[in-house]
Length: 212
Ligand code: SF4
Image (cartoon, rainbow, N blue to C red; front, side):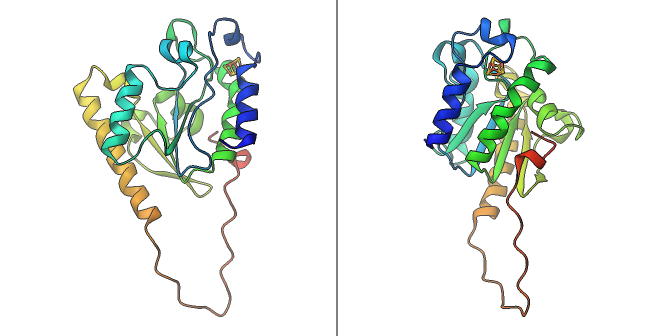
């Protein structure tokens, strides 16, 4: 892991910026390589994540592993985190002031991981990262481009655990994200030379993005 990311994660583990620090067992900064082509952002740690200090290690995490495997990805190749780094008591919905307090960490992770595609899991993450695009029931599986990065909202695996219809939708969303990545990462034909070279697109800057 990048030393800067390790340092950031140590800061998260000691964070007391919001009241959730008082009830957590462990903060859950995230896991995976940096840089990474794919970043996955869920909502908040649950019971098992809080106990182990790792993201997506409970039943929803096992489903996420399966979904990743089905599209040729794995935990070793993607960076996984949540909007909130500490578990809300009884897994209640995140409160706006908690998300606000925690978002700077996600922005810094985004800068260090430099993803080409971000899978946004669940409606709370969607509201924080792509405000105003619409409800997840309408926009899941679509690709939104911000600052040169593709953002794909998906249903949360926890919601799909006991709902076969949502599970089908979630599998299709991952398939679409995979198809998009395949196109993005395919070797490009060299451009014919031009008299005036095109100006390169500036790298995505999380601070300029309204989404995170
Ligand atoms: S949820 Fe985020 S802001 Fe709140 S204590 Fe945990 S790390 Fe800090």
